Length: 262
Ligand code: IPE
Ligand code: IPE
Ligand code: MG
Image (tube, rainbow, N blue to C red):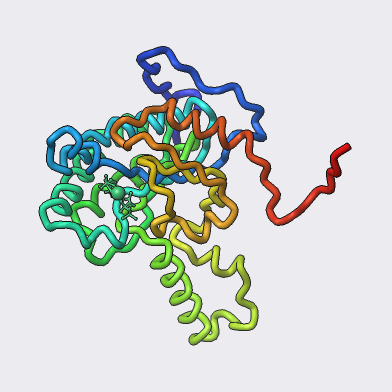
């Protein structure tokens, strides 16, 4: 089993940037990342959209380096949504093929850093060869404890909740579960990754300000940070900028404190 003393540290940031010094309580435990803006990045350069996806690999590795260096223990990245099947066959083919390559190329690096890789998403429609690479990465890294990277591929928040409801209904039908005892915790326990903590920081690149069906259940009380940087231009300093914004937020979870001025 991997011991944390054996883990390698990520390569240093080329400009020597270092992680922000935040009190531990202000470091998000779980960061959800919508890796958006690849197509626009490419088209702005006169390139086809697929070149933007290719350029996004570096940003993903940078963000994981930034997470490891700043003590973020859970990162979930949106790689392909249940809605992305609407794209052209050519773009879908590229994303599937490229996902396989990235997993093959980077899983050993992530393993060396002590990152545990998980896959969350639906099986139907997803290329079997992509599922194989995702599962191989899960197996290779299963004992790592420094950070968890959940790759959300063929993932949709509503699909995940619907699948959980289906599992619960099946158990109720067979008498394994009493329908009157279904609670929030019952739903949470039947999600794809029941051990995934709630999202603290929800980060989206490219300036779009929407959730696009990512981690709906887990983000109920997430702090939303939308940055304009297009995904291929993102590096670990983008994550750290979002973490500094997050650290200034006042999380109330529905509570309130009376603080009358004067
Ligand atoms: C995000 O970039 C990557 C995926 C959805 C796979 P986009 O491909 O959505 O790029 P834009 O938003 O069109 O620029
Ligand atoms: C969300 O981005 C999905 C991923 C980043 C994988 P999209 O680009 O697909 O979302 P919309 O279409 O802008 O909502
Ligand atoms: Mg997009």
